[in-house]
Image (cartoon, rainbow, N blue to C red; front, side, top):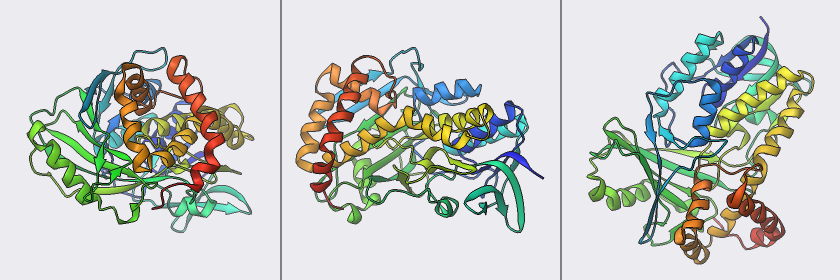
Length: 404
């Protein structure tokens, strides 16, 4: 049996692809290697950009806990900001634990007519250098386009060279759930001034994402550009952060064992004959916050749009369009991560980030994934200036980068 599109992976990017394809009248199959109801470790935060993508997909997110803004903490400085209202994005986000969120999207994919198969580990099927479908065990399922939505790049991605650039930034994060009476708050909280057990500033942040269900998603993330990154103990870093927020949040014990994951922030190859990569599999993760759900949803829909417009050129068209939409901002974030990997640059950088209302507004836009090549106003101008300036400084940044 042949399909127009075969999707490998049942996360947000894969489900968005399947939903968009089925609604476009295409014959689409999605292969998820886990069972129905599997949990994906994540921070669970949905930015206003992600909400806009869910609106475009016509997904009912009323069961998610609404979030109206972000509380940023850097040292003794604290700012609580509302998500801005813009022509492109709504003024609210959400927290939606990934187990429930992913299942909701998969249920929608099934309801729209996608052939969704669980406990099915699919790998690309190649004829020469062209992907012609997927192989699940001994079965070959042919498809005109294969979409890699495999999250942090795994076996399927390695077969096609869709792997992380070893010279670029990546991240590690860990999260747990804990009970708190503040579970229904409508602001995310981000502590930008983390330190490890030796007192070394960590380029990353600690978060409190209230889930509205009696718990908060508590976590920490760090970038690979910090000195001593390979020796960083994430469990210790999380416990240190928990000790800071325990009293103000009346935080209870972890509901379950903390779980860690890797955040790819680059991709050497994100398309080829007969295939494209979306979401984390394509390296679409903001280095400044570790967020990628919104990019996964958008890139999945964009892959389908390119296929519908021109099946023959879909892969190349997709690569061009996601490049125009995402590359400048994500490239700037990766380069900036080399700067904040130096402790003596990170501290003054944080003071600037929240020091004034104007700077905090731009930091908010960065943390909310609200900036890209089309962003108007001050935030867009700063991003374009930073992209040009850091492009010039890139060779120096790489020579002087803090080594893990």
